[in-house]
Amino acid sequence: MHTLIYWLLSALALWLVAQIVPGIKLRGYGTALLATIVIAIVNVVVGWPLKFLTIPLTIITLGLFLLILNAFLLKLASIFVPGFSIQGFLPAFFGSIVLTILRYVLRYMVFGGYDRYHLWRY
Image (cartoon, rainbow, N blue to C red):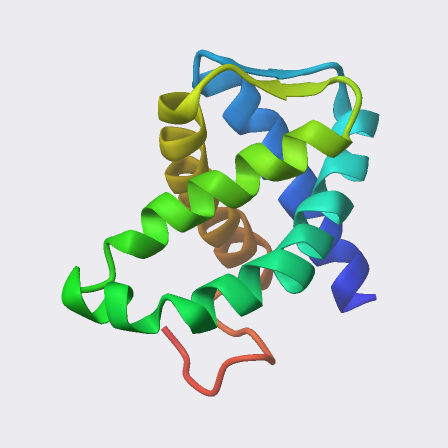
């Protein structure tokens, strides 16, 4: 049940990003649900190996390279979902930042400060 709620909140966050960030187009909430699944798959299949391989670059840039990598992964996910498009790198860059913030805020609003996947309370 917890995973289903996370999925719905992530789709809502993606839909909100499409409303906020110019250059990101999303056909509807159903497309956001599908895109959220594809984003998760892309993050597992491509994201984790890339993050592992770029650890030295991430350390040198004090973690800022992860912002670029997340934008690339979001743009890559948009290629596989009809009705979800990102026009250029800057919308992907800002979209990934806004998406991360919105996911956090929505999860905090729904679950309060407690998340069973983390060991601390806010």
